[in-house]
Length: 276
Ligand SMILES: [Zn+2]
Image (cartoon, rainbow, N blue to C red; front, side, top):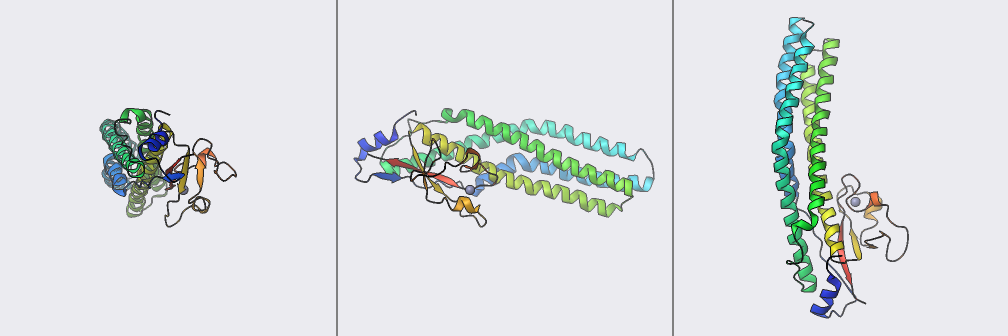
């Protein structure tokens, strides 16, 4: 704990209620779109360009009836790898900008929620440096996710080409499979960007709550169209932040099932201040 928000709130307002729950902080979808555009779209665009060249090469090699054709395809795949390496340097800078922006947005919303609920202005008490390690971790995580999306697309394209050559598959069928591989990469990257926004904002919320000396949080279900049933069932339940145990008693939530942790979980927590 870096500062005692419940104590500051008690002093500022002398609250009559025994507890106050801070308002929900919902990250806007546009931040996920921004991450996709900045970090993932250039890699998809690279594979999209490569896919067309590989399709052309496949057509040529199929008609040429030469056995050295696969080597040319290997060269194109290697060329894509080289381009990815150069691209990653630029993407790292773009991702860094994004994490800084998400941190600034989240901090502003947290400050606003605290001010609205307690009358305490915490803007001088918190700064980006408090969460630098988390931002660094997300930067690294996204770098490895980008590499993984690229590697998976490369693999799918490679498989389509080599299977096509073995079976003498018509070029238009192989072309379809290759373009689908790029599409699958694009879809996965879109989901990842949205998931990363949820995960980063929930990790930041967690840290901001801890450093403020918040001990209880209220679970907010994502209210997505297909929520995890057991997550939706936790909507409104108050938990101890430290132990993830319900205040009313019961089993602790496992760490890997906590808010924002499972894949594509859109749940959040609202901080709860208690005055005794
Ligand atoms: Zn959830």
